[in-house]
Image (cartoon, rainbow, N blue to C red; front, side, top):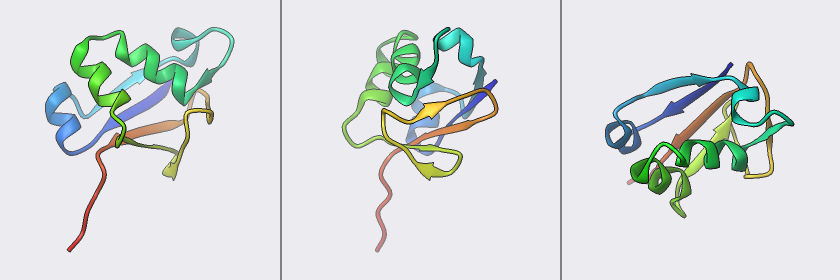
Length: 86
């Protein structure tokens, strides 16, 4: 299972902080961040807006990821808004 985490305002918008999904459920031939985003976007408009927002950050196993990064069962994928400091 892939553990998918949502932080800050994304957790509030989606109504969940965490979900699990099997990589084979997302795509039978292999999974990338982009494919996971497409899978999540199918859940509805709010999901689509969160995962496809230009400033959404994504990390795989706590490393910043790109849409081309591969993910497999056992990985942790996190989506979070940009963070600013002061």
